[in-house]
Structures are given as structure tokens and as C-alpha cells.
Amino acid sequence: MSDKIFFITGIDTNIGKTFVSLLLLLALNQRGLNAGYMKPVETGVEINKDDSKNYLDGSYVKKYGGLKEELNIITPYAFQLPLSPYAASKREGRTLCIKEILFKFYELNKVYDYIIVEGAGGMLVPLKKKHFMIDIAKYIDAGVILVTKAGLGMINQTLLNIEYAKSRDIKISGIIINNVLNENDESMSSNKKTLGEFTDIPIIGDIPYISDKKQLENINILNDFALKYIDLEKILV
Ligand SMILES: Nc1ncnc2c1ncn2[C@@H]1O[C@H](COP(=O)(O)OP(=O)(O)OP(=O)(O)O)[C@@H](O)[C@H]1O
Ligand SMILES: [Mg+2]
Image (tube, rainbow, N blue to C red):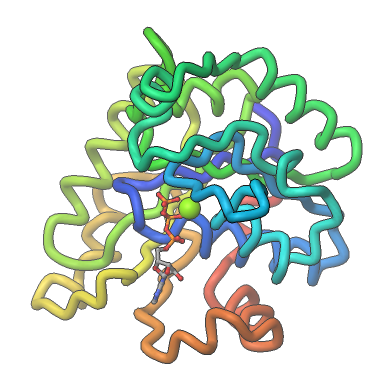
């Protein structure tokens, strides 16, 4: 497994993979490390009036991560329908080619020393027949970063993901707890510690709910968040 390639997955869609990808990128950049980002497949991408595509994840990370690549390089496959890549590609009549994704990845990997690849949804989101999202992590030999929720149910969800990865011989390099759901229950004071008792995988981040959304679009604050909430030491060798 490469220790410079990270695949960001999550226990669910909308759990904060893009936000975490950006923070990781900013944390690496602030250390002077040359890091890039790719979101190989995005669904639910609207087409603008001028026929351009409204990539959401790629444009957020490109904007605040200062990426130079065009959005169609960052995201080679965009589908309009907000479905799994498998279902969207079938409905839109466009075949998704994994070799093409890998080719684009290797092109980016020539430019960057570190690369962060964001999945769509979670590990077992169908990509195409007999292929799942997490297969990409395996093909590119990435260390997986698992983004999980903070409140009640997180131990079960996190351990299920870990067990599945183990069964496929996929290495999870780190876990990031992200309170994207603004949960606030009794379990939250002990979840991190309890999770640590059931897995040896390092918890490399514990991000609170950020109520002031303007902070998510302020590069100085984002750089501070990256330093404050991401513990790179635990994943860099
Ligand atoms: N800790 C947080 N506090 C507040 N808002 C957050 C937090 N983390 C993420 N968000 C916001 O929650 C939304 C979902 O996050 P994000 O887009 O990163 O999820 P995702 O897992 O990448 O989703 P997808 O599966 O669509 O790629 C975004 O609007 C993001 O800005
Ligand atoms: Mg995302």
C-alpha cells in the first residue's frame, strides 16, 4: 500500500468526505507537501445553461485547495442523475470505464507527491456491474480514510466498515469523526474512547459541527481547521 495515496470514504453519503478531503489537502500543503485531489465519479451534477457542468465536490476543493487542473480532469465521470454511478450510468446510457479512471489517476499522480481520492457515497456504492466504489482504493493501492458520524450508532457503523475492509484486504489508515449531523447525545462524550477500544486504526480527526457556514468558505479559517482537526502525524510515515 502506498502511504502517499489516500482514498476518502465514509459510512454514508453527505458525511463530510469532501470537507475532510479539503482539510487533508490543506494540512499536507501547509507542511510544504505537494498534494492533489481527484473525485473520479460524481453523480447529481447539473448541466448549466452554457452546457458546462456544475461539479460540486471538485469545484469546492479546487477553489479552496488552489488546484490548477480543470474540473473535468479532477472528475472524469459526471452524471446528472443523483443515483449511484452504476444506476446513473445505466439510465444515462454512458458506460463507466474503470481503466479510464485509473489512467486519469496516474496522470495526476505524476504531478503530485500525495494524492487524495474521494469516493462517491460509501464503500459498497455500485460503480458498475460487479464493481464497487471501494474497488478503486484497491486498484490505486491507497490507504483508506474513513469518515464517520459522531453520535449514537457510530461505533456499529464504523466497525462494520472496518470489518468489510478487512474482509477485502483493504487497509484503513485512519478514521475521522465528523459531527456533520450536529448530533448531541449522551454517547458523544465516550464514543471516541470506546471506538479506540475496539479498533487499532488511529483516529486522526474529530471535527465538531461548524454552525457558521461562512467558515466553510474562508480559506484562512479552513487552513486553521486543517491544522487543528487533522492529525497528519498518525498517517504520514
Ligand atoms: N463538521 C461539519 N460541520 C458543518 N457542516 C459540515 C461539516 N462537515 C461537512 N459539512 C457540510 O455538510 C455538507 C456535506 O458534506 P460533504 O459535501 O463534505 O459530504 P460528502 O460525504 O462529501 O457528500 P457526497 O457523498 O455527496 O460526496 C456540505 O454542505 C458541507 O459543507
Ligand atoms: Mg463529496
